[in-house]
Image (cartoon, rainbow, N blue to C red):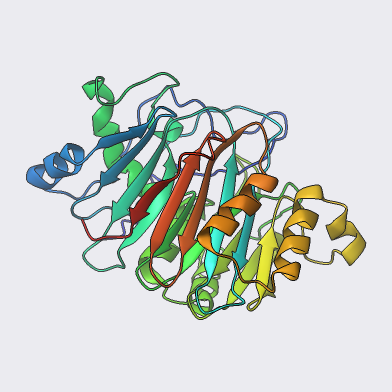
Length: 338
């Protein structure tokens, strides 16, 4: 996980709602990456690609990344604009906190990715593969020319959980405005989640890490984040008029959709259908949900373009994923070291 602060960064940004006209957002990914993130030996790269397996016909894949990578290497982005939205929550009212998220976007391939950098925490995350040049309809099991781009997959965690029980996920906040401190390095809005998963064991540490970087949202929708850890602590982090705002949650629950929560009164929050559904259910349950109940709640706030729904159990590190609204088929994974 050696960090190279060369001036060749192409920032990875991303979100879960429409991008304003003329800006870039996660797209269908037709271009190859220009900078490799891999710090692997040839044998490690081969072992990584050999671990690739197809899980379902979204398509959803699973892969274990073997070896090291450069957290700040560049990955380009292909523009698109679509009116989408994401939903996230943490239910932390009981002894087994669960983090849930719907990722609502274009019909792209996705990957459950296992990472364990030499000087960072092991983690499991879900990646939108369109950033890596995987086009709709590509089958990576029969298209080896595209497979090498998967070695950049660690840079693109749209949500994830690490071995210390810290989870993070993002959603778009069109009103977000991050500041810029010339003394700090700059990273993109998806990339910061890689840094958090690799280095933070608690919500407090994750918030502190967010404060060490400028987040650049100029080429995509601005983002806000939900953080949670196995102690039950949680926080929403937003960027308002150049300031980083932290809204602490913790037991019994916290939720996030695509409305700015900073300064929002109860009526504003309840006017958002997905947020109100999350609030009502989590309040009624006292923030205690089984994994099945957590998936049921994600189903209630899903949209026709929900690409994946995932629950992370922060104590046991169990992961459950459904794709494209196929709720009858739940794929189970376990955080592991490649």
